[in-house]
Image (cartoon, rainbow, N blue to C red; front, side, top):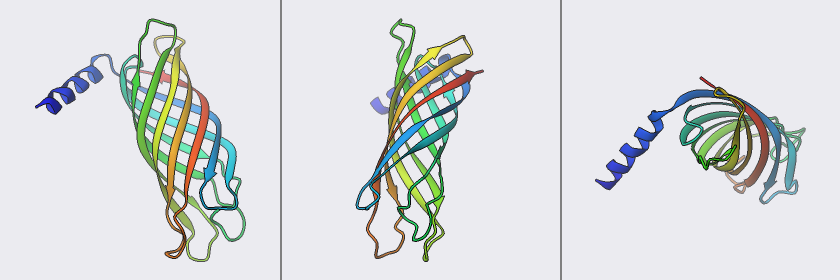
Length: 180
């Protein structure tokens, strides 16, 4: 019964002043791999997102990520291709009567990228995501977002005999959101 009541309150607060919003962001990421000689990758990242919620309370956000990949971790020849991912995250923002609205978010994601390997041409990955940042309102319909994302990424095995490779991805970005 408590779970039903809590879920009802969450849904009610989500619909109270909720709006659809879209945003775009760009930044830098640093990915540290486990069990590889090429243990890190620092490069650019981009984000396109759509969400539903209130910038002062709760939101559900779907984001499409683009991560530039400058390393050869999984390929036998050449470099691994750029990564593309889709994330689903629940965002909780706070209205502390200051000019900015701080937030934190949690969710999960999945993605893929191409590799040059004898046994596979592409790899899939899954991630658990955490993030924090703040919205800086420009007007009722526009805000600037400054954020930090942490992702624990687990990659598909290249072969059945290979080790499982995981990574820790840290990213900082700046973006702009339009709320309808």
